[in-house]
Length: 186
Image 1 (spheres, helix red, strand yellow):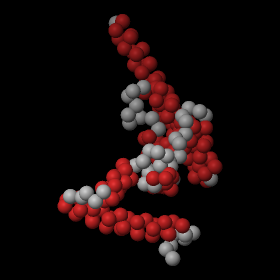
Image 2 (cartoon, one colour):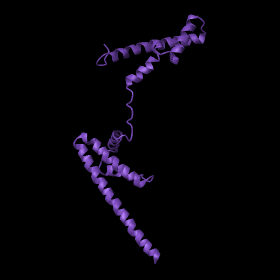
Image 3 (cartoon, one colour):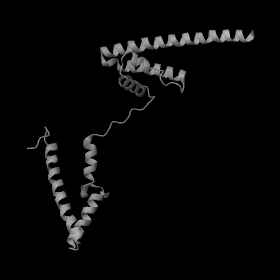
Image 4 (tube, helix red, strand yellow):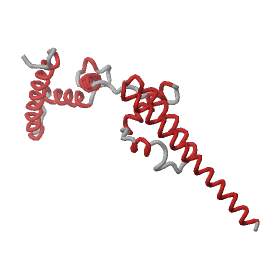
């Protein structure tokens, strides 16, 4: 008899928990949908959308613990056709704004990256840390000046001269293109 009473209480308790979770899911759906609608009206509501999604993600995460796969806000986002990438973009922005996560540093521009690579090819700009290519070219130049080339070195020397001339011409065209406002060669 005591077992039946315990099961009855446990059954009622499980039902209460399920009802509470269902109500919470409904509330999450309503709040996320409302925030999404506001965001769609004007992007200035993006942070608010991020805040709502962030809070519900945290709520679901704390309830589910490590068993959160397939739960949380993702099914709600999918149900309303909200792109997850947009939701997580605004969640990250919101997290940065409240100091939970630090914003990722901006990626270097293509010109900054190219500048570093090209600086390593210019001996007078390399700050004493010369690139392997420059060192090899200087060593090859020393060998040519010493007039002590083997037959194999002579064959490769001709190829190196051809390649350096090709690179020089190609780079001159790129320099001209990049120096022009519209990126065209004159």
